[in-house]
Image (cartoon, rainbow, N blue to C red; front, side, top):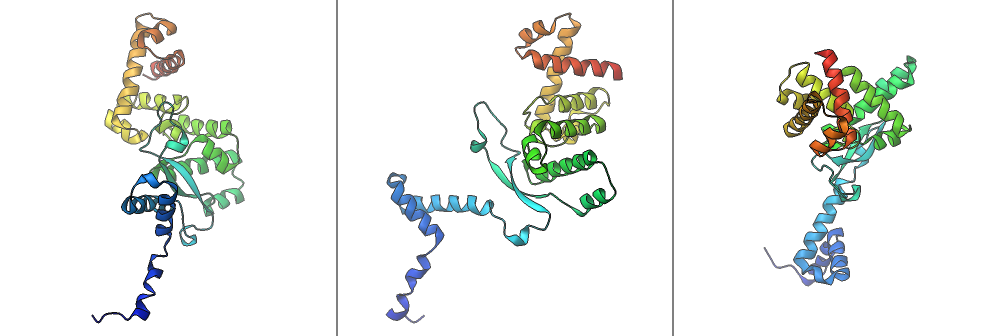
Length: 255
């Protein structure tokens, strides 16, 4: 290849006018101890990865869809962890579909329409490897937190199906419904722990943990211990003991 004349080489600096280089330069200027040009470029690449993951061009968002942030399924909560410290996943959710409009035209009750939409949104988020909280659903659907929680919990009680949301998969909140469903599927329906885990969107370890805790609380009850004594013996909260005692009472009636 013939050498380029100087009149052409002078255009080469235009190649460096990129957002990545601008970020790297600013990082080096604001945080001089972070490292040399290679480290600055690496930091700029990481920032661009986050930015690109959180942006969706118009061609990827259709009418009736919204962009919403969910918490990664693989980033469960821990003591002291804030939402800002969790891995977040940008989600594309169907907020209004042809079926939603048709249900309105058919005068389906608002509660049934809300239930169907809330369950759909949770499943869509889960398929994208993220979870929605009751607060997410309340904000998206313009209802109160308690109302959407009651609607989804009633759906779970009625159908025996767990809705994959943060309250159940990450065990944030009371979680009575999914504990009840897990115990019922294992001890009433006779399903294996592997089947229960698959049907309730839980890990096998989580299912075994809930079942073991239920067995311990039940054993304490059969030994004549009070809820307070059971909580002390098992080193757990009295509210958790009462949850499992209510589940045990229900299991007794169905066996």
